Image 1 (cartoon, rainbow, N blue to C red):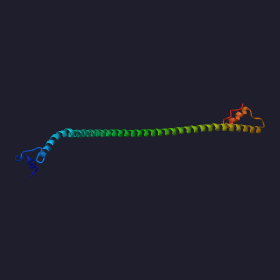
Image 2 (cartoon, rainbow, N blue to C red):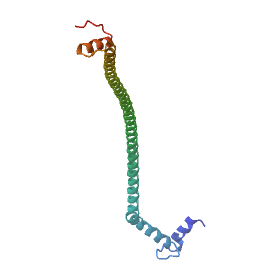
Image 3 (cartoon, rainbow, N blue to C red):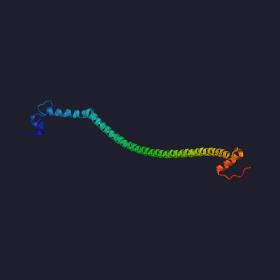
Image 4 (cartoon, helix red, strand yellow):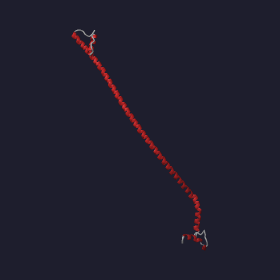
Length: 184
């Protein structure tokens, strides 16, 4: 017999009607349906309500967490882009500073080389002047010596004492290549 007929069989008029206390007939089904009907709203309020509310809250929290994660991801991406820009700017600045430092170092090197050349030139010129002064002193000393030798030689030749100041001047002019103006 199909299930529907089995459930409705205790309700058939020929058997004395429905007895809800008789669990062998349809009473079992009746009480089950009645208890279920009474328990469903109670279960819905007490059990399913908090579960549904918890699930809704969980879904809401999940959506907020997803939104927060997406926002954090966007912010992190923006921050990364800013940091990359700042890093690129810092690298460009460092490269510029390095180039400036190299340029200054090269300029300073050229200045030092030029200063060293100028100092060397001044030293060479000073040495030349000192050599000329010493050369002039040596030539003057040689001339004086020649004058003295010439006067001694002339004294011997003339057998007289030649050596007056006028004679010295005359001999110095001759040694220097000047014309003798006359003695007097």
